[in-house]
Amino acid sequence: MATAAIIVAAGRGTRAGGGLPKQFRPLAGRRVIDWTLDAFANVDHRVLVLASEDHDAWQIFGKTGLILAPGGADRAGSVRNGLDALAAVAPGKVLIHDAARPCVSQEVIASVIDALDHHDGAAPGLPVTDALWTGTKGLVTGTRDRSGLYAAQTPQGFRYDALYAAHKSHPGGAADDVQVARDAGLDVAIVPGHADNLKITTPEDFARAEHILRGQMDIRLGNGFDVHRFGEGDHVTLCGVAVPNGRGLQGHSDADVGMHAVTDAIFGALADGDIGQHFPPSDPQWKGAESHIFLRHAVSLAGERGYRITHVDVTMICERPKIGPHAQAMRAAMAEIMGLELGQVSVKATTSERLGFTGREEGIAAIATATLVKP
Image 1 (cartoon, rainbow, N blue to C red):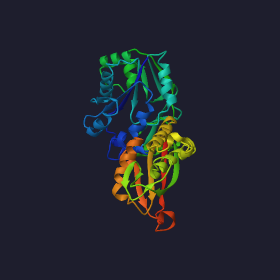
Image 2 (image 1 turned 90 degrees about the vertical axis):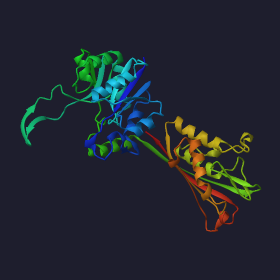
Image 3 (image 1 turned 180 degrees about the horizontal axis):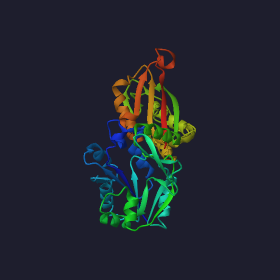
Image 4 (image 1 turned 180 degrees about the vertical axis):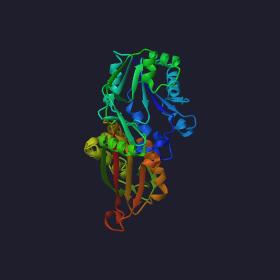
């Protein structure tokens, strides 16, 4: 039975401040919406409901394979549009989730999905544990019994056909999809929520969400260093770009010192040896091999282990050739090989002030740093 998730991201979120709708504001190195979408990466279909005026978001997310739907006049209208967008695939189960809840755990999501095997609907909730007051003009006017009260969270899950029919017949004014479902006579189970599954509403919530997300992240830094001596040739290959030069670089492969350093930096971040262990120079099959083979392997290995490469920085140390005129081409080549944006790749150079083997123009050295993140 296929499961779909509708991420409601059409609101303006003005109480959160910041000048942007809260779902598009930065949070722990990414945008709020990126964290939320990633939390539902394992469902079969994802629908993102966006406001019509968010033109940039429509353009960006339109290239990602997500199903896009326009926001409605209110939350219920946005959910209804999301349900409409799923009509062609008609999933068995559907989850409705607020884009402003980026800290939702896989355990909460799984609990909701599993509960739908036995109920029309299911939603996470937290039992209310604090005393409840009523108040007027800053003064306590009474108390309320908290027995049986829960703080509602999302995702709220339902059998798709049942929720779709409930929305079509509902007169409007519901607080959430649970109310829509219950007004249609559907049973909705309560599954355990989590205190970290907060909804970002005020500026202070960003600090709390950042703390939660950074606590969940596994951030790795790796460094790499490589050296190749000059020999015969009329060019050098650096970071995937052939640069004219009076001498070439010697090595078992194509001697791309920059790409080798970056590859070793990734292996270092993974704590998985170095390029020589993965591609032994004693193995004749790597004689003269292009270094992008090594780099693609390292990138693939990082992905298989759940890491995302967020940034690489490589510095060439040499007197010549001059790196500056070719740095942009090198960045572009590396970004293409690694599947990164240009702004995530840094290529630069320095000299050793005529000191040492690089100063004597006997060869080129490179150092690199790679940053890997597992959400």
